[in-house]
Image 1 (tube, helix red, strand yellow):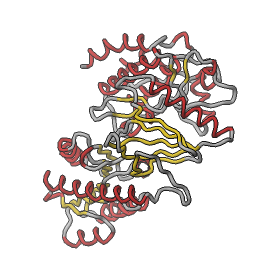
Image 2: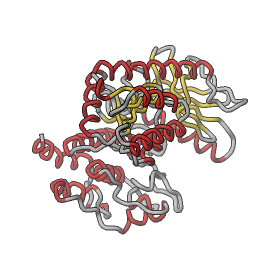
Image 3: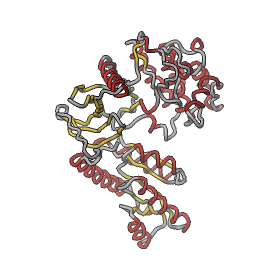
Image 4: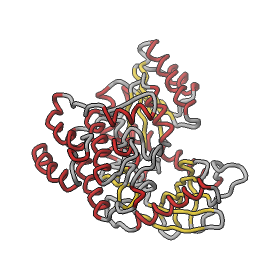
Length: 421
């Protein structure tokens, strides 16, 4: 989520002028090193929709070429569609071959700012983004003060924390961005209802387990827990906040081989740490890997984690744990799992980092899990063939053919990383 200029703006840029987009990205990220700039082609409505659903950007920047009637009409229509996807989005138009009339037309259509490309400089670009961040920050403060996101009749009041905004909600829990009075910084506040139903008791146990597991491990690649407590009707957990977002968001833009290997190695090191503590994550996926300001990945969400010696490490028949896209064959079949299960999921993520696509897709969770169990290990394109042996051992269907430990993987990765450095 965007948090103003202190943490760098979050921008969605819609356009097809590659050089212009590279220029924009360079100046924004050099001025704000922690800025996140996601670029999509004008026709990628699905990507835009997913971004706006998962993020709260400071601004959407749309390229419009007014030298072509078709392009201009489509550009303005694109802008309006984006604004409908997220009410109140701050929209900046980069105008190619425009004039005073097109400027008036654009602003009347709902854009917040109009920047002629012919007159665009680094200073004017940064000023426009700063204004977008300023307005967005002011709106966030207002949301935190009024807190209109809460359902009518429900009051969430956790002593020592000021709610800034709601991030996610389910029937039994909610996740907020909150301000810790003690730490004087933003945190992620997870709040779980206390109830007597079987589902509520299971969720509360998972919630308590997440706290116990994360708090037992102190490592830079494991999210830090700041606080845990109980209230008459709720349990709450305050954990480290990551303004730079998660790996899922990062993978919406291409990742080169060096960066993919860096992520693979660092996540493997984090797995080695939790495995030493006897902990299996069991839900490893890009959405559960956050990024620090220096691009270092951090594991979060240990709600499905178990101690390796726990008899519950056997997944019950008919019980699906984790995402079907990243689930191991043994998880999909309800068999006993061990540290190699996390390594399989890491292999799926490695394939996605290298290719930009998931290895197996299908119309249902069952269809996807069946592919994890029986389909061949996917082949990488020719220019990535050097990484195929590592992928083969990570995604081996049989446990005996897979890496036995994160240490084994890291031993293979060190020469690879040195070779591509």
